[in-house]
Length: 313
Image 1 (cartoon, helix red, strand yellow):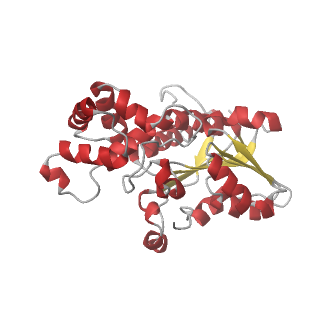
Image 2: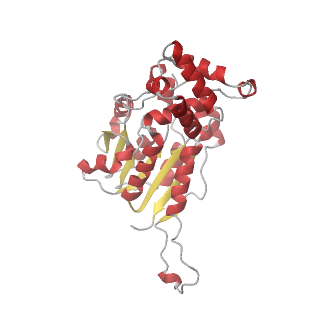
Image 3: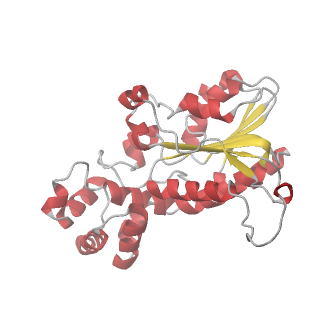
């Protein structure tokens, strides 16, 4: 298993403009790559790392033990960031980062059932204590529900065909494994699609994963909590990996960095006009360097966006 490489590690931490005595939140701790570099820049500050994956928390605790005096690890989903930080008396942060999606170790562990590359039971849960898993979705959702998920979350053009093929296959028994699902997806797709570059199940798996982990709803809530918690001059850095995430982040950041509309006919002095509460630190998405693209495959679809709070409001 390859060692996990944090995507745009230095770009993210550099753009957070870390203060040695600041309060920081890593909403998606993972294996602690970003947190480790950020913690190394702290002196009297503190970092709170959040993750819903017990294995990730355990591995990060080991990896970050040299910084144990300045890092607190918390189990939970960043969608509840405010509530998770409340017991620690943290209501404001100088910087917050989110590295979205599934981490490489989760993908590379066959037992987790995230990848079409390994034959394993359908699972895909980031929090392995939750009940809903990919097996339940594949084996209990109706054809319409599956089709809607594949189209909405996977942007899969053949969503209906795949959904119908799954429901038909279930007549002979449950679809238990990733390779069973792969075969069903292939059987449903036209030859011209199968001849295209890339795995034919990729978009379906993305859709299942998003559904199982309620990722887009979590992101919507997590972004709102993060925005609310940023201190003046505090920065929020978000790394996305597919268009659904990026559109949500881009749209919110554009809204936050735009001044409220004022009817041109109303006479208002420039000094009296309300300004935007945030400034875009990155005018457009930052992408991985050529050097990183060559060594870290996961970085190819990554986009980093950063905003800074001007004032509370």
